[in-house]
Length: 321
Length: 242
Image (cartoon, rainbow over all chains, first blue to last red; front, side, top):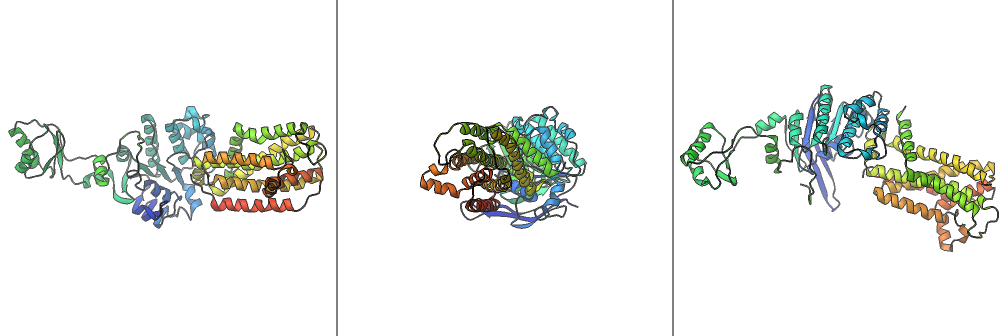
């Protein structure tokens, strides 16, 4: 049985400029125990609003959210006993020490994890007496993750858990998340990192402009993305029109030297392209057909270029998507 | 250790680790106590030893510094940095979080009294001991009034704006409370406004109680009204998230 159930969730609120803005529009999904479910989407897509509704911070305008069958707002106390959360940033007093805040949180729960072991687990064993303000961004993220896990939660909601974390820190966090799943915890996280979503998740929910665009396992999402074109590299300024007529398919030069054929990459068609190139004494560079990456799927579904993989680079934009 | 006790311990730890707050809570009241009990800046209407006027007033200032500045600034930054938001999503909950903060204020005031009363006695203050129950009652009302205003501001303003506003209001109340300058020496309209704010009534009640002077019911009503309305307003308008 799913631990998190989101059904037809709508979150809208009064816009400061007047009128109403709908942050989440009819989103439904499930998160199962022992699995990672990722909410993937561009900035402003509605991922954090969805997460905050599950955490009980926001009230749904319509639709329902349940954790273990409980309403996060009405049954707040019962939900907080089994939920561990990680905010996108902040959340800890700046002057408090690492060991102090983990011990504080341990006092909130009936059966907490041992603070010292948890601090070691997230790689902060040498920083127990450091204050929050003296930690690096990555160390703060790891401490936030530790606080989410103190109470042995059944559900962990993590908002961009590896944002601003270096490679070593990300590996620590990923291993912690895998261990959580092995213990049967349902992990729900938001991320911009497509590699992270693809390698870590059992289920990916792609949200854009508040709408559920696609959901499924990484394999399902990749398989469902129709291989309706393939690409190759060759000399710039080939006669794409002539090639297209010869193979009876549309050929477009997307960038100098990069060509896209808008037809499924059947063996016959691929052979026709290579034959035409050979007949015109043109060298063939890469030919890519078939397997896509999640970045391709994400970009096609949301119209956004794939976000940079690895540590998130904070880009300043005039407005969010 | 239960959740409330653990949170209270953390609040106290962070209060006493904050040098600036210690300066406001203890340093300034002590300095005022020692300086103004020795130096008569103005020939006021009240006869007698300056310590009799300054010592009770400093106790009132101690209450103000802890509940207005200490609670207000700390809560404001906690809100700005999403600490209130994060703690609200634990079994501790919002109610026990606020309770821990208020208990921390009362503990701080206890420490302040434990320091300021002996120093006052050493400087020659001779309180009327039967006045202490009234002082206790006024302390509770004053904490509610100033704590309520602190939370009202902290729940609305950004961390830095709240810091500036809290300290500014503390200084204004310091000047118009009757501790540094007797109220009778303030210009008429200023005195009229000062007597309507919670600081002057608090000082008047504590002073009268400890010096055995007569006291009317007016300062009690004024202070009581603020002690009820400000916390209600804070609860009504408090925003938990930055």
